[in-house]
Length: 81
Image (tube, rainbow, N blue to C red; front, side):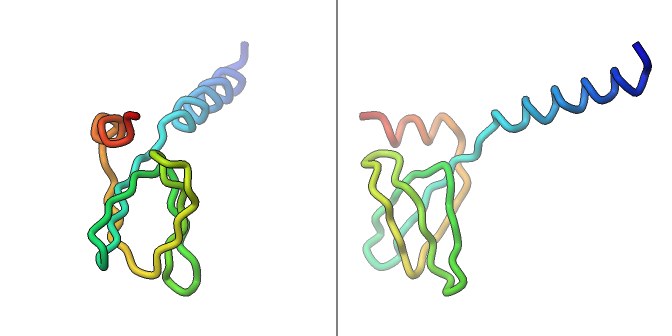
């Protein structure tokens, strides 16, 4: 195989591996102090955040929030049913 082909295969493999590495977030509502855990957070133009609560499956929109990335262990402990 040519070196260019091997490099392309290696790059594709790296992208596939990195795509499998997700991020986990703890979202806190400063008004109620309620904490949510999610894998994706979307910020709207207004500054509000939208996400799916991992524990309940509910779609949540918060006008103000504190978002912190957490480890997979913390995420798993917090969302265990």
